[in-house]
Length: 365
Image: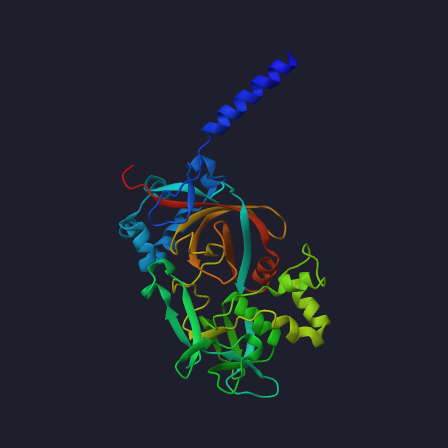
């Protein structure tokens, strides 16, 4: 009897496994993204969401043409909504994002808006250059010749009639650089590049906002991964805080470690605080950076992860409003925590599992 029961269980398992839905590419606007149709009942804590708080974030996101291109008439209707939850549920359907193989769990990290001390004049204290975009930086959009390479950019400079790679971090010279300002801490400057935007408190009392403008074309390399490979920090211990502590304890190796990342970010002054790739001011704990090969900028998403400090669940709607050099993959995100010491603490420690749903228009279904 036991053998018969086991056989029956096996047959039923393979029957139901064969009937399980397979992820597919379901939207022309997401040509590389595999999705599984879902329902709101599958989104844990959906009923506890603050829907009224989401409406103004969505309305602000609709300022961007990318958001309007994705959600169409919903951007025109959002200002007249009386029942926020009904608006989202009746207008949008959730789709779970997976890999082609059906894997549904990815990774989420965090970022924040740092504060640095700086000056518009170089001095003994303020001697580390915050680069603006160099005048000789050349950007080539490859999709103008090869449509299949949409979104791919080459960056370099001209030597005679030849385009050559732009200088890497280690070899970049200040002599022909475009200067935005000078700061007093090279490690904080490096992490400003990683975060992508921040505030500079100048020595005359003024505070300016700065944000990503471009970069030198070299790939981003994680210095945390470099320290792991050098057996200096364990994989389990690596965080912004542990990297900072290691660099403080090993000042003679700071340049070596920072130069392990050849990428250099160029900044521009901005009129508002932390601003993402949509050109919009980011909303703490609601804005995330994504890989736009898989998740379009402007998209509304629902995420399930956990707090990096106490591991309590984080289950909420978020908005794809930014990108980042280290954010690669279908189920990969970077959560913006805001400004201040608590934001820095959570962002620096966040390395958590992630499940992600994208909310797309129902289009009359």
